[in-house]
Amino acid sequence: MLIDTHCHIQFAAYKDDADVVIQKCVDADMLLNCVGSQLSTSQRAVEYAHKYPNIFATVGLHPVHLFATEVDEGEEVSFTSRAEVFDHAAYAVLAQDPKTIAIGECGLELYHLPKNVDREKLLQTQKETFLAQYNLAQEYNLPLVIHVRDAHSEMISLLKTLLAPINGVVHCYTGNWTEAQEYLALGLHIGFTGVVTFPPKKTDPKPQEELLEVVRNVPPDRILIETDAPYLAPQAYRGERCEPWMVREVAKKLATERNMTVEEVIAVTTANAKRLFTTMVI
Image 1: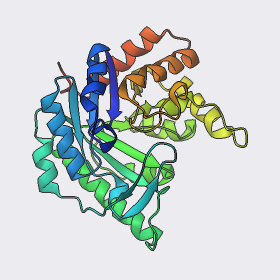
Image 2: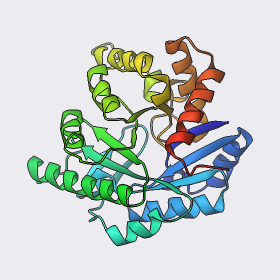
Image 3: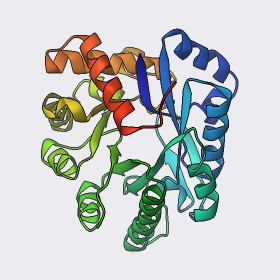
Image 4: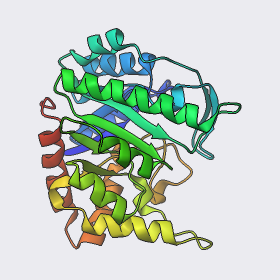
């Protein structure tokens, strides 16, 4: 069994053919973690989880949805986010659903910065909202799905202030090995997407080289694989809409870098996902 631990199959990118894409995943013997980014998409994640036996839900508020801003992901998806305030009561209802397996994605985002918003005010709001979701996760004994972009030092510092142990994953990891070791020391898992399959940029190969160093060195019991679909299609499908079944390409790259078979990577990452997301059963 193959698990895509982070996808957004409920997003508008699949409005015309979600059933077809999900059936491909059923045929491939896959489970999907359908991740919310705001209240509406979190509600839809839960709805999808009840409609499709192979789907589970994660509910939360993404940092890009705290302020209205233009989000341009190039060849993949562009949209304008709308400002939303974290509603504990509404998310608590979703958190208690039997098919909800985690809280998120939540975290810190210093890449997509809204216009006319002070950076420190932005960061403070993101921190407060992340802590609110951390508290919700603690309240219902659920792991966190953590988003970090251009904010690893800020996130690591914030996590170190938490009094209770944190359980969860830093999804779509693109940091370096030094930063990864900090997250691992805090007990977190590391999630890899199709980004690991990308070739290094000729003008700046260092980030990809550093990412592959992480791929090779993360302890086997802390690795998760994901797509972040509809974003970040693996290199074999660049330019196309990413779909959850493409997570096998991530497994292939990990197998190459870690001198394992694809089947071994799938077995390890599936076991890790089921251990982290303890209510993910079928």
